[in-house]
Length: 315
Ligand code: XIL
Image (tube, rainbow, N blue to C red):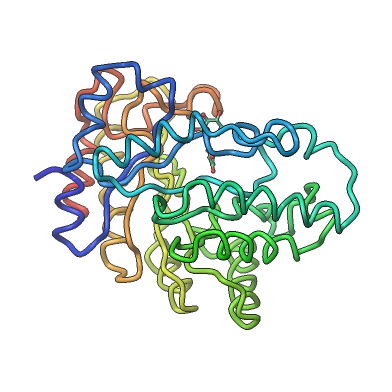
């Protein structure tokens, strides 16, 4: 069976992948991407981010995002909106602007509201806030936090809820897959938001892992967050290695993918798994982590790696 079929047969909503607009002209790539028995869910890797959707204040461009949304629709795949508010890939009018609290509040409200409204009815879940914390558990001191303190999170979540009451609203984060200061800060934020009845439905675990270093506490962390009354999802899975890849590394990677999938499988509130692109040909890893790569379940020639079988076994 193919991976989305397998995921669904085990009670998950989907197995999915990130994709990007520039990849869609590669017919070898789309031949595999377009199969919804393999991928039941799509996340745009870049084209719904703030720099892509509101490059100048009040001027919205949805052409890239629409291409991905239309692909999801024509293939009957769920769509994950990514993302509304993030410190990275911001247009400079936001990142280097100096705003009063009132001004930035309405900028966030207008961005979230216009973006989420545009895709209303088409999105299963939105990453409303992406990566709010530093690894040491302190808040990222970006323009949002510096101007509004922690209140920017509820401002964004409330605007998104109003714009599309049926979309699941997530906070998405990395390095929360094991017990530590960052996970504790996020858990405390979830508790606070829930106690204040701020709309929050889910926590995304990015899961950008390293071969041989998949956190053993992943399943327990998924359960710990779910116990706060949210669903959870693995939203950006890849498992990188120091290049060149070897048969031994590929076998370890298979085990690592299997264990990661099994953690989601074992937690009822874990709704699905998304890989951060399915082929090494289009992985973000080599561009970001020098000397590392081969992080995806298919190689750069679209051949399945041992990791593919690891995912299948993990479900
Ligand atoms: C990455 C994209 O894949 C790249 O193409 C881009 O150059 C940088 O961003 N966490 C996230 C994603 O939430 O948005 C990032 O995506 C990867 C890390």
